[in-house]
Length: 431
Length: 200
Image (cartoon, rainbow over all chains, first blue to last red; front, side, top):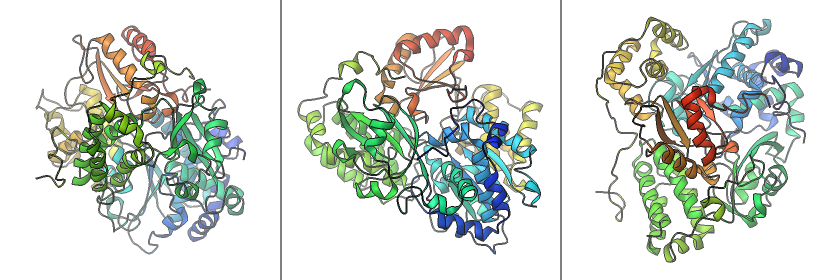
């Protein structure tokens, strides 16, 4: 398919209002302003749009959960806390196509009857915040955001809220806590944010890419949108390919594309003619797939059938020289550092897993440590308030399942020597 | 007792623990920063000024370089909340410094995608060149080297951020030592920024 979301990202000044208007920006908003909120939700439901943040929950259904008759204010919070290792798609959209993003925010606000939208952007995206602020001011001036939008009487204010370095803020209730000026720690659900969210009011939390898809549904019609990609996995999708590939980057495709195509056709294959060893298909919190499992559709349902998840579509490619024990140790350092500490199994368990993996990786482990890894991981998954606990399990369990020989090598022989190109500080020069 | 029979109870510091820094010198916002903070507070409902705590702490850091006990007391006063609520936030988020740091805090991404492309080598080269370990500041107060978790620029790995704001992409051990010297002479203008910001 031809790119839709990223069609113009490489062109000069693609982020500006003038450029965006020349390429059809805010046409979807004009149509949506002529529709009742329920009709907007109905269109999004019929389009089949599923949330791009990780869980793949139907967006229209999520919006429909907001109580219409509640006297309280309603809020839209945008999850721009893109922190899942291997993911960098929202970054590109906000930077190069911000008006599509704002357009989606305003349509979503109309659908859920919200007057205020907060964009929660991760603290590390300071340069992006400045781009968004500049373009948001232009959108206000031109009457696409603010009071009486395009003469319709609709009023939506958009504010940008910068976080300060916490992976956990990407979980929707933790994001709301952080927006309220607290630690980013999750809340017990239910009640769900749609009923009790920001400041105790009905709130929808959507991912940036999800909202960027919304204007397309109104600009071109839900029938067009539903016709892209396989059944129940509709619409254009952004894939982030990184690691051992020749052309790392963000690629747009419909969800019939396979992992093999993404790695070898889009991202140009593996440098130095080396062989593929493993792929993480949807950010570090999804199961690793071995090289013989990449002929599957990179869709929500296709990757579940293959034993993993689409998640945030952060595809991390690892070549034959990579030790999967080292990979698991690297990721558990991340989870140990980022665990918010609210639930004991996750706070303590991530620390233990990292310690055991460090020991095994150094070549000082014993075979019974491998069983201990399973046991500790099993005591975290499903036993925490938020999905972070479940996210810790895949890097350990799936590497153990598919690459047990790597672990046994570390235990029996010791740490394998680094491949020459990595030890001698010669990076794979694909930059 | 730990809930897993084969593992000892956790040790070391965790971000969920509260750690209150020393009071430090007296602190008050400059009139300009106070006005900026009030502008940010206006983004939230009047009874929800606490939402601006993170923004207020960034302003403290901009004004004083790092966050002290006195600064947190002042922020609590301006926001209208308990000092403990500010302490909670400071100790939890990793982008707040609670002790003096170098003029340039060099934050090297260490998570998988960067690591697969040699981030460990970059950190080693940086530390060797500056004669420090990760977390330390050079004696002249110019550089602090910090390892950082995923910055979300995995296609331009390994990535470095300086002072929480400025990005520098596609590093290797040779380039990073040159970068240090360029920072000394040219300041943050030496940094590549995010390549998307510049036209492609």
